[in-house]
Image (cartoon, rainbow, N blue to C red; front, side):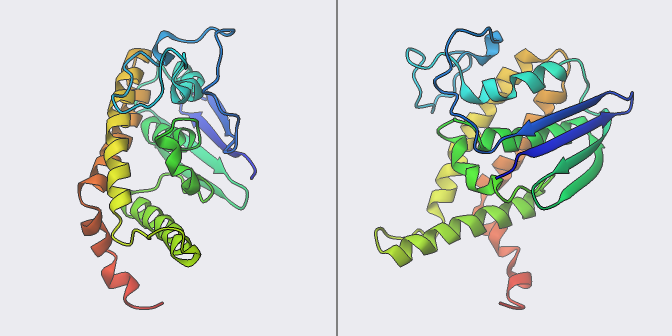
Length: 228
């Protein structure tokens, strides 16, 4: 899988490029050889559902993954406009948007492909990354991917498939907890609000999915019943 590249050009002419390696090395074994920001310590605002132990893992792997970006945008306000290009293996995307929307998309990709035991469960979606996805697009990709997995489980006969999507509901309940705690990390890492607001939007989207996944799916009824 090729890297996914985000290029942001701000109104003042500053440009930032970030390459995300979806299959990058596990960062849970990060040592103390490098100096990292105080808010990247695992024990700092650690998620109360985190299975990692500070005595074994010094740093939060997701915090390490976005540390560089958070530093670059610590003095930028969330509503500043930017031209954003996203290059994947098969196509490129462009959008002129607030910096917070661009960061939300980058953070979502980075955190899903990192070493967090909870967030990394979203990694299959990264192979079909859709930048700037809204609620409907997120639910469509999420449920479609999850049901493909359940079909494979059913075909292999090794376990009972979860056709009722209970696993999705449980996962998003866990994600809500992680995202809220991580938002507190970013607030302490930023002088201005671009990074923390980006994650706030991400948290809101997660909450909407978790609120009623079945209701969200029903909204696709008029579309999917027309064919297939």
